[in-house]
Image: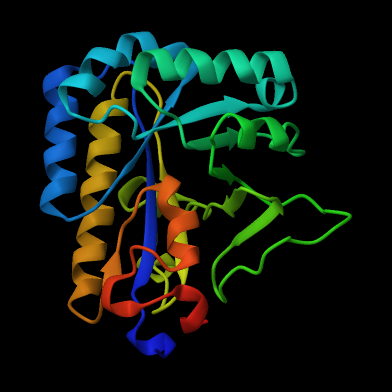
Amino acid sequence: MGAKTAPATVVICCRLPARISTAEFADWTRLAERADAAISWVAAGDDLAALSPAVEAAGALGRIALEVDAATLSSRPSLRAALATARRTVGAVEAVVATAAPQIEGRGLLVAESVRTLCIERFEPLARGSRRPAPHGWPCRSAVWGLWEVCSAQPASGVFSRMLPWRASQLPPPGQLSVITLSATGTAASREIRGRLERVLGMVSRRRAKGPVQVPHLADIPDLIAGDGQGRAGSVLRAA
């Protein structure tokens, strides 16, 4: 099929505040369900114990993307321990979000630990290119077999970032992919993130009036690239 009939793909990575309540997280998941969006809920290792009851109550076990910093990602023992802790508290971990990691270490360990997708802020130069071709318009690469890396979009700056942190123009055209990350800090983090999530889902809804848009989980990217989960659109590789 041609690119015009392929869906635009938007991955929404939403950082969970450490102190989100069970009722509040359930409300967030219902918001995602109404929007037909598989939000990628992101949590840091230090927050997992506190988040576990809310994650389990919302039926989100096995759908949490683990956030790791550069130090953890560069240390095999630390990375292995972080993944093991995450699995014990929030189920299987198939996606990892790296923060402030200029160089990516431990790719082989991620594959061995059943991680399928790694979200990073920018691509580092590689001596060898991607082992598999990514679809046109998909900011993805596969530096090692069994792992796809995806580069996240960058937020708008200035006063508009507080009103609408993501520009509608950052939603991709048909057949292409954008990864949007939502986060906030401080005592009002939950309220701010929920508001941003509502606005992004609203943008997705308005785009769906113009053509198909899918919002898969971060961990689903390898299957989408392979052609699974595309429905009537077919493989994104064929649409490229």
